[in-house]
Every structure is written in structure tokens, then in C-alpha cells.
Length: 245
Length: 368
Image (cartoon, each protein chain N blue to C red):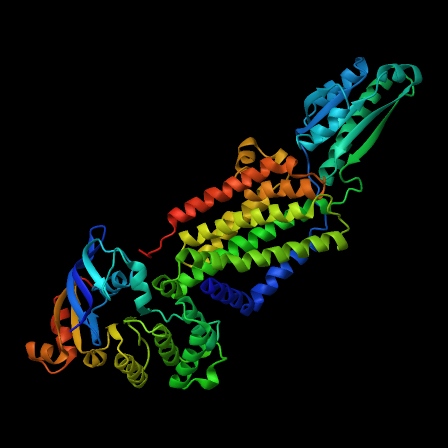
């Protein structure tokens, strides 16, 4: 199996506080890798290091085969990112947002045109194209935001709690988009709070107090802890946590 | 390069979508120009003057002593030749020149009638009228004293000459002031808010994760405000020429060149503020309280700097708007060329360079 993310003892310290402590794991091509943990467990910190938003204090990592210290620019071209805060421009229209984000990834005008038509078709947003993004419901914004994050066909897409604040039905629709992306060969790295979403992942890592405490498929984790749902796995693991928000 | 043009287009869209702000940006200079039409009067202390004494007799000496003794004046120099007067004015060091003709005392004693010439720099009309008033008062006092000693109808005419702005248009004073304030407002406030907004909305993260050069993010943000400022500048100049009837005596090109420099200073200030704050409110507060208010106080167009205590005058040196104000007045009112303003321009240039260096050092490519 191809390894697209490889980390070795990746650590981030803020003064005395160790936000992420010697994280080591591999993510394989085409999988959906769930990155779970309670608030303050260090998920976002870890993810930000992988995206190049934050410099690790120690340890090594490669993303899509590129070193995070030396080849940050190459990594940027090969990843997509959707942040926790919904992050499109609310005062731009749907089409303008698509064009802008495609444009900064260097897509040509022709590519942009093709891609945006295709994307709008897939999302069924034809009548919303000229609407300001700010006027769309949150679920739509999230779907659009995800589609924009993979517009440049990255090898890996990082999703930081992509479905916060929407109902289960909308979440399910969002996951349909994720599956489509995976089918096209994109690896998905996703953090979440929702345990129903955890079930959708191929493999899951659980972070507690800045360390990875468990890493396996949802089925095996449930088996290991002799429970029937991911909720219980989460509870078993997070119970020992010392820090929380 | 295609990237950056897409980025700049997007920034213009942000600006044009926000109609209220846009209206404010263009409405503000117009309203200010019209409002400031009401001139302000100020009391003046320690105005620097020169004396050109062709007479060197008892009467001229006594008047000079009186001028020296007064609170209002501070005699900088006694000139030998009136040709030096203009040069001294151009250096901007003095507010008034007092010229005594030869035979001043003689004329006074034998013909009972003589003249003093008061030349003032009327590019600041309030100051000019006020100080020439003070000077005439002192001269009249001297005449009255003489008349008490000897009951003769002595007469000392004061001949006023205003240079640079003989019609005493107050516009020459506030137009450059409004220019510096508006440019500051647009550049510092709007730029810092625009950048901080991206941080607040979370879009900055997306931009930093993208291969787009983070430095260009900032450049693209600055471009629309540079353009808006130049448009604003043009509106102000058109208003002042055609509505207020204030001509631009110097080179328009030079005026635009130094204005662009000042805009850059303001943009880098805005950048510094946005680098140091995390919320739009904080950026706005710092821009208004930290930048705009000191600029209004220390630029010299509302409150004469000469009257301020020395420490405050020192503070005024670090206000970029003060230097820009001096430059604009020199070009617009006195019609001076680059050779007269290079020092002030250099100060602005130095400030901009310093701010940019600090910005680049401070600017974090990574968020943490």
C-alpha cells in the first residue's frame, strides 16, 4: 500500500505545554483516515503541522512523499484543506468563490470554466451560482467549501471538523461527497466529534492528551474494547483524559 | 502572475460589495472639505520671525526690543538684506519678517511719519493674520509711548504683505490636512481591517495552505486601497481647485508622487496593525485611536505645533501625516519643487522603509 502521510514522533510544544506528543502514524492512499479526540486533545495542532500552518517542535513527517520541513511548497500544491471555521468568502458569489480558489491554485481559465461547471452540476447549485455565499444554508456552504478544497485535484484533503453544526441528514450528504472524492483517488484525512462519522472512516486514530492512544479500523476498535458502538470506544479512551477545554 | 490578478480582482469585489463603506470612503473627503471651510482661529505664541533692519537707529532698536520681549515672538535672526527674506521663508522656519526702512527714526522725528513692513507667510492664513495683528499692536504701543513723551502726531504705518497666499484663503490650510487624514483613514484603517477580516473568517488559513505566496496576499490586499486612495486624492484636488478656488501652484506630478509615497507609508502602518491584532474591532480601535487621533492633533493643520510644549513637538516628528502635510503645503501653496521638500520626503521614505522591514520580520508565513 502506498503511504501518503507518514509521521515519526511529530511533536509540538507551546512553552511547557505539549500539544502533540510524539505522534507516529501512516495514512495510505485512497483511505478515509479519521482523526478523533476530545476538545483540546491536540487534533487541530497535529493537523496544522501536517498542512504546513504550524512548524513542528521535533519529529519528522512526509506528506505525499514531500518532507514537511524542506518541501513545504510542494506539499501545498498537493493538498487541499477545509478549516473548522467555514471558510469561503461570504460577500462573493458561488461562482466567484470557485474561480478565486481555483485561480490561486494555478488552474487555467479553461480548466476553471470546466471545473466550475462540473462542480455546480454535481452540487445541483445551478440556480444559486450568482447568489452570495453568505445567503446559502450552512450545509450547502460546507459542501461547496469541500468541493472547492478538492478543485485542484490534490492527493490528500484535510478536513478539520467539516460538518460542525448541521443535522445528520446533511452530514450524510456531505459524506457522499467524501466518498466520491475517495473514488477519484483522493486520500481523506478528517477530524470529527461525531461518532456516526467515525463509523464511516476506514481507519481511526484516537488522540488523548496530545498522544495517539488507539489506531485501527472502527470494527477492530470496537472488538478490542468489547463494545458495540464507537461512542463507547471514545468514552473508554477519553475517560482517562486529564485535559479538556 | 495570473494568480495575483485573480487575487486583486477578488479584493476589488470585496471593496465594491461593501457599498456602505465605499460610500463613506468617497463621501467623507467631500464632507470634510466642505465642513472645514469654517476656519479656525488660534492663539499664537513664540512665532519665529526675522528682522531686516536698514535703519539701525534708536527707534528701530526699541521696537525690536519690544518684539523680543513679547510672548508672541521669537526673533530668529537679524538680516542685513531683504533678499534673504524669501529664502528664509522657503526654508519654512519663520512666520513673519519685519522690515525697517533706512532713516526710520529720522523720518519719524522730522516728518512725524514712517513705515514698517510686515511680511507674513500666508499659506497658513490664520497664523498670518493673527501674528501681523500682534506686531501692529506692538508697534502702535511704541507710537503711543512716544506720543506721551512729546505731544506730536507721530505716525508709523504698518505695511502688510502676505506672501504665498495673499487672498488669505483658509483652504490652503485645511486641504492638505484633509488630504493627509483621508489617505491615512483609507489606507491604515481599511487595509488593517481587510487583512484581519481574513484571519477572523478563517479564510487566511486557506490562503496560507495554498501555494499562493503569502507575501502576495498582502500586496494584493493593498492594491485596491492604493487605487481608491489615488481616486480620493483626485476628488479632493478637483474640489479644492474648482469649488474652493485653490490653485495647485507646484507640479501635479510631484504631488501625486509624494502622495503615493505617503499612501505606502499608511499602507505599511495598516499592515503592521493587522499583523499585531486578531480581531476587526481591535484593528479598528488601534487605527482610530492610535493613528487617526494623533494625526489630527499633531499634523499642525488644526492646532499649531509652535504652541505645543516642546515634548509634544517632539512627538509630532514621528507622525507621518505631519511630514506629508508640510510637503503638500510646499507644493500646492508655495509651488516649490523637489529640492525644497527632499528632507521631508526622505523622512517619509525612511519611515516607510522601517515599517516594511518590521512588517517582513513580523509577518508569519505560518500561523504559529
